[in-house]
Each structure stands twice: as structure tokens, then as C-alpha cells.
Image (tube, rainbow, N blue to C red; front, side, top):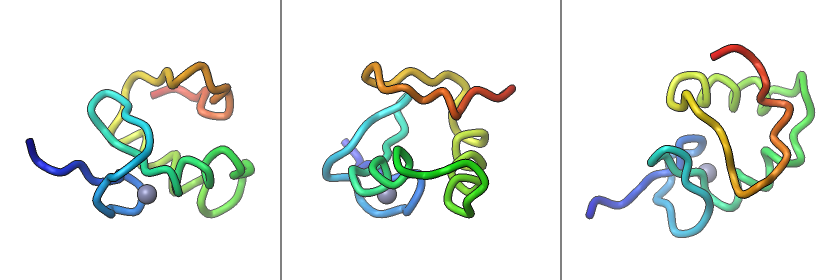
Amino acid sequence: MPKQKCIICGKPLNDGIMINGRGICKNCEERIIKAESGTDFYEYYKGCIRKTIAYYMIRGVDYNWLNYPL
Ligand SMILES: [Zn+2]
């Protein structure tokens, strides 16, 4: 099985979350949760999501800030 890479930072995925087969490392996940709308990281992350993920539901975490048309 090929090693997964984080869709945000591109590093090999050792820990973190999977969304539709795409991985986000623990480090980026924490950044995302703390990210505020309008920051560079937030905008960058939204771009990553838009490109790679059409459906979003993770671990019951409140990702309301991702509510935008895909
Ligand atoms: Zn990452």
C-alpha cells in the first residue's frame, strides 16, 4: 500500500485524518481547527479541499467553516 501524503503540506502521513482517501496530518489538522477565516492558511486550505474533496464529514468535528459550494 503506497504511503499517503498530507494534502496540505505534502509530507508523508504518519498520523492524522482521512477524508475520502485523502490524508491530512495531525499537524495540519490542528492548524485547520485553529485557523480563522480570512487567513492565508485558511484560504490555502479551502483551495486544497475544493480540489480534492467533494464530501466532508470528519469525526464529528464541527467544520462549519467549510460550508461553501463545492
Ligand atoms: Zn500536513
